Image (cartoon, rainbow, N blue to C red; front, side):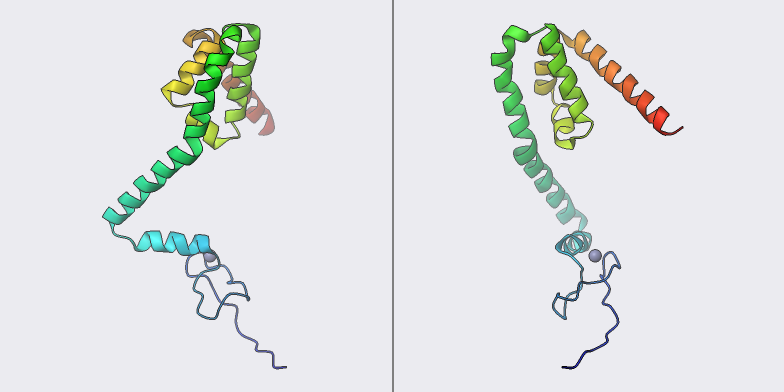
Length: 146
Ligand SMILES: [Zn+2]
């Protein structure tokens, strides 16, 4: 058995090593690097079209389900609107959005905001809860940096 000692092949995109199991003609370490490289080879017009397509996909696959769920829940959640339980649920959403980018994006849409505002008992209450969460978050970050 002959063992060839070749220099490690380098990914053209990230300059990391290309895994040994990849075929000899492989130029990238991973499909993700190939995608990024292909994106950069596109014309500005093609990039624009690609970005629009991926934004549409993101909207369809990631955000719409959240917005639909929130919309559906809104009808069922009427009895807790403006109650401490309603505000608690809103608080949980606001905390969850800090670590969930899909939820974070979804909550920027008016229909999502209106649902949360209804649960909280109004837009003023929603603003107040958001300020509380932000203020506490800043305290935590300040403490962590000490
Ligand atoms: Zn790479």
